[in-house]
Length: 398
Image 1 (spheres, rainbow, N blue to C red):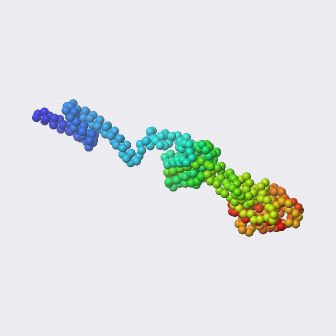
Image 2 (image 1 turned 90 degrees about the vertical axis):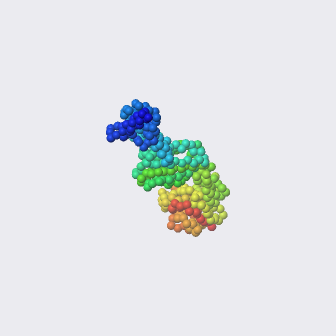
Image 3 (image 1 turned 60 degrees about the horizontal axis):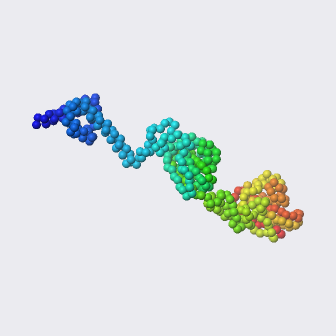
């Protein structure tokens, strides 16, 4: 019984030392379960040195406080993970150095090209996507060619193609800002520009090689972004044309062709009438020629030809060849009836916008020309305005 009283007295003295008014020493965390367990630990209680020596008591409390700090760090990390915060996303050196930015848990050089996100090689049928923020990972070290002087931060994405591919691209901006997208082959220098646009959705056909996509804030407050690329191998060379009967088929995006009606026929991927070298030959009494405004190209412009009235003709043109005419025959051209284009009409004995004209008309589109000498003639119907409207022309000889 006496021994029990001594133990109780020792515990009371220890409590007075721990709970006294002296605040110079470390404060024990009374409510922490670790501290309570340590006080109740029979080894600490039975050891008279630990109980009677206030320094030892404080040391016990200090060690508990250190352990409590470790426990708090572990609990905080667990809580952050519970809140959806990935500890791996925190940079190992926080904050990063002045010339660095933190991206995906790593301190990278604050240089748009050096810290470019690498999509790797895009195979046909693959889609890649990247979400991020111009605030946390954007830098301002380069500038797109269509962003303007007010442009600020940008993010660069690198990718590689092993075959000609159509790239479907899409970017979404979150926040009060507008962005620009630029595809280029040289990241640091504004050379090898394939396209620069402020349209967030589009398509571009690229040859095999390494490319950089620069997403840049044009103006406004930078915010979050999503960038997505989808690659599709091309089945035809963009811009190439092939004949399909009397029509011409053009590859427009590497995977799709458009078919356009020619005025008469098609030879080696070129509509008859598209140039002086491949005119529409008018036989018999002539006829009406109809077709797509996308079929012929703009090959001729008579603006610099004073002998033809210096008429500016920037639109597409059609060339008609009338062989072996005789004096007194009448060439009738009707580019008005059933046609919505603004046309100029030229009559020549030698074809070309640098050749002399026998007659030229730019204010009327329904004309007659009387042949003054035996020979072959050319009639050129050319657009005064750029247009892709369908054409409907009548060229006859009597």
